[in-house]
Length: 377
Image 1 (cartoon, rainbow, N blue to C red):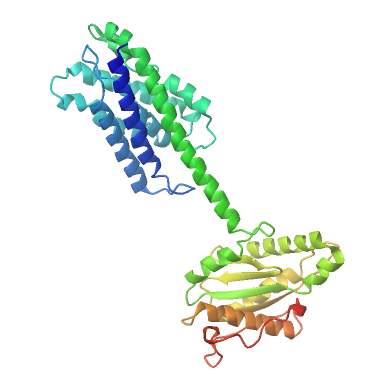
Image 2 (tube, rainbow, N blue to C red):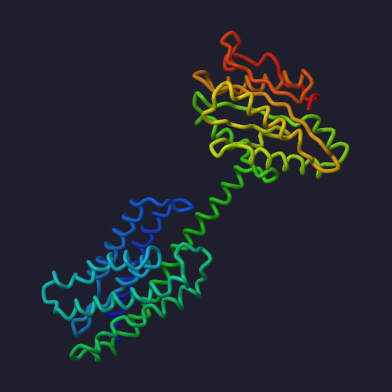
């Protein structure tokens, strides 16, 4: 084993890790979007990496080039299947054809390596999914040890190839295993980070009690409403009495049940939110103005006819709503709140939809003239 060969393989490994890190940056979100251009980009990066590794490969005294070019090919096969991997590996396998002084035997050996490693990589897809962040470091290592066992074994078919295989096989196999372990760990670590970030983002925008999106998510969705949408604000009547009489655990069960009822009753394009405390919000998408009140009554009646257990038995809600239009979204929110206020002042367990009235002051121009009385909750 020559020191020069070891040094050149270290350079090859460094290039592999660097370009694989660039590849890992193409994983930007979770769940991964199924866009064709992302797959094409990763395929192109794999081809580039394999070609770069071949070009920088150390050459044995016999003229044999030893590189880690099959590592990114194995990763591509594990991620996208054997067809994509073999396609990405062909340019590197055929590279000796355009290099002066390279014998046709070098191309034959490259194609044999590609087919053997590609076949084993496809065989072990069940054992190591590159999208699985829970793949252990030990699993990466032993899968790589098996995948790269046949690398350069085709030398025994060539004249004088047995001597070259004896000098280079063990070190070449070890560096391939090390390179695959590093790349696989890098990608699965990136996926684990994206999954954790997605989980934390979901927790930050979802109410744990009701299972509905929270007020933070409501405020993010509000700017994307358009004329033809509508807003409903739903307040649980006398909810403070439930907490005072039966305790907060019973009150929490009521809120969770109402959240489930709203989520199940709405169309797929509509969305309910835990707005705060005992108040919920619903954004209705593309709803006819005459149907807003109909939907609000249906939701109110659904809750009023639900048995919440003993205690507290039956519960009612007050609903205020308003349509979105060419005016400000803040104005719609204010109108829905005003409609809810009027329902609570009028005895609760009812619905009122407040249409846009240009004669009413805009909330952006001054303080609201009336506000909900906390004693009415």
